[in-house]
Every structure is written in C-alpha cells, then in structure tokens.
Length: 411
Image (cartoon, rainbow, N blue to C red; front, top):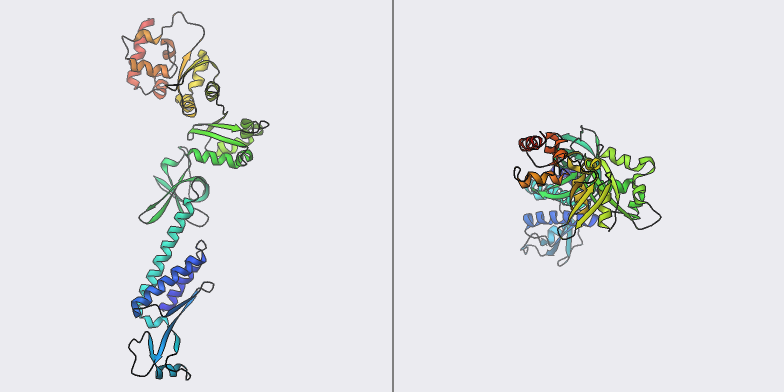
C-alpha cells in the first residue's frame, strides 16, 4: 500500500511542468539517498534509477561476495552461498547487484520517505512560484476572481496560482464578483511564513503604462516613450509622452482616431480622465501643457525653489485648479514644480487683495487660499465652504470664519 502511495506522490511530482528535469532527478535522488542512509547507515553502494517519464523508480544495491562466515557488514558484503542462490556463477571477490524493494525499508521509513518527498515537492513549487513571479514584476496579469473579502480579493491565474489584490491597490469604484475576469499589474512578491505572496495593483502608474503599451503599438515598439505618469486612481491621470520620430505625433498616436485607443484604457480604469501631454525640456511650456485645459497668460519660474507662479484670466482659474484641486496637484507632480495660481486681467475696484487682511487672518491661512488661486476677497467668496475645504487643508469652521471677515469688508 505504501509503495502505491509513494508512486502516486512521485507521479504528482513528475507532473510539475515548471520544474526542469535535472532539478527533479536531483531532488528525488537526494530524498531516496537520505532514506537509505537512515535505514542502512550508508548509501554509497546503492544505485538509484529514476524514470521521470513513467513516474517510477528502482533501487539497486552492490555488495562484494565473501566466504561464508566472513560477512562483517551485511550492507556491503554477501556470503558466497547466498550469492549462489541468486546466480550459481558468482565467485568470491565479485560484485552482486540485487534490487532493494521498498517493503525492505519498513513501514515507518516509507512514511517518512513519503512525507519528505511531499515536503520537497511543496518547497520546490513555492520557490518556483516565487521565482516565476519575481521575474514578472511590472507585467499585467489576467486572472479570475475566486474570493472577494473586505480587505482584499483572491485571484487565480491560468495555472490556479493564488494572487492577492489588496483594497489599497484597487480603484475606489472597482467592483468585482466571483468568476469575473480581472487585469492588474504585479507590484511585489514576498515570502511570508515560507509561502510566496504575490501582490497585484490597479492603482500603480505602472498599470497605466502597461495598458498604454497594449493599446498603442508605437509605445510597445519604442517609437514613443512614456516619460512620466501621475494619477489619482479612478479620478484623473496625466501622462507625458515623447516621440523620437518627428513624423509621429505622440499625443495623437496615444489618443487614436476619435479616441479609439484611449477609450479602452479609460473603461479599464473606471472612467478615469486621462490627459496625454507632449513632453518638452522647456519647463515653461511643459507647465503650460500640464495645466491644460486651462489657458495660461504668463509664468514666472524660480529654478532654485522649484516654484512656478502662473497667471491666468479669472475665468481660467477654476479650470487650472480642477475639481478638488486635482488638476493643479497632478500638474505639480508631473513637472516637479510647486505651482501657485494667480488671477490676471481687469481689476475689480470693489475687490480687495487678501494681503490687506493680514491683521485679521493668519498668514498661513492666506497662503493656503492663494495656493488654490484665491488671491482676492471676492475670489474666495465666489466659492462654497465645501469647495474650499476640498481644495485646501483648512477646516470648514476656519473657512466660515474667514468668509465672515471678508463679507464684513464689503458690508
């Protein structure tokens, strides 16, 4: 019975497609030899023959023929009379080779051998899986949702390996059910309690980059390069692209005819707005492009502090800042400059500059309001308390107090 069980374990080992032949033979021989060492105290005079294709094995023992009564080590020597029972032609000094059946090991040794073999199979599978996915970091994986939990989703790949998509790596509007097909990028692989843990992500900029490579052949072929990606998953992303071939329009190639190429990416990312921007080393022009769709009047750059003062017409300010301050925040991340927005154009005689309120409102609060383009009293009062709370780091209570001070000025 133990023999059959062991053969089954061995056959299971044989079916592991990802383990190369040499490693397989080496591990199996090592397991058998360690058992021989325990049972007989020596494994040097044994030949272990493994048939990978059949999932079978044979063990042969070589012993020297000695005169009857002179056997000192029955594992290394065999008496002449016993050798002649195997074959009449044996003589003293010759080597006898006989097969050692598994039953000779004893029940406990066979069970230990089976456990050892199973353990080595599992270790090999784990190491192989860890190695395989370590080499696939940054690649897109397509899998099937197997289990949805509160904090993570368990996904199975095409070989039924378990992958994890944590809640923190999911787009906020992602919704998956068991059996759904899902795409994500491998971000890290780690060993936890001697088990490989493969972490996927749908929020990583790398995921967006790989989607562009799939949808835009020019990026895959290297004719267009993605210089940088910044994104707020599910909300908005900015992608800076550059072409080394003057005949190719990088932005047009990424968007496609009537948006055909970018639509697939937008759908995959739950309608995330994607701005594709033509990269340039001219920092002023790059900031102008990064703040699109807003039209900028002028820019003052400070290279030392990496700050940019951007002047726009009053009706362009909200476009530059974007919903919840998203546009200006992403433009800052993309360009590497801290961007301050200022209104420009016709002065309102009744409007008052925020700096006039320095005695009544703390300087840091005024700086917060200026950073989102509100540099006059009316520009602050035009917005709601909720809008300003979203765009700045100010509490609603603080904003209400500021608005009361500003309103009092006009009353």
